[in-house]
Length: 152
Image (cartoon, rainbow, N blue to C red; front, side):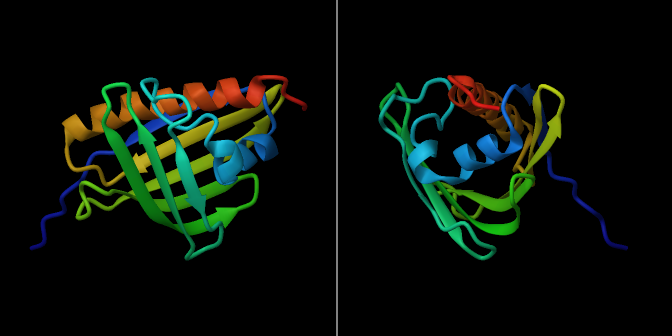
């Protein structure tokens, strides 16, 4: 008999007053991503990003927190649906054996977009809670970026 171990995941949903195309571009264009990426405690101007936006392509994101620590993550794109969906692995450089899975969906709605972020295969509940706080900050910063002078 095989026992299935269920790893924690988290889901964050946010209605954003911007088009799916605008949000997708902000998330996938490194020249835009460097202006908003990171949790609340990210030092402005510290974000560096490389993105090879294709299935099998990779990305690397690095940022500095206000406590002086530098954080870096990388991964590989598994699924890309223009302006609708991204699925990719997420690996923190400091924890190379902890490969997790990110799914971002963008659904156009009247007045904007419903963004749903799911981070799956997290190591434990403490990691889930920490990532939920971080991703909430990331989405807050994304929302400010895409709605500042947003064109519909």
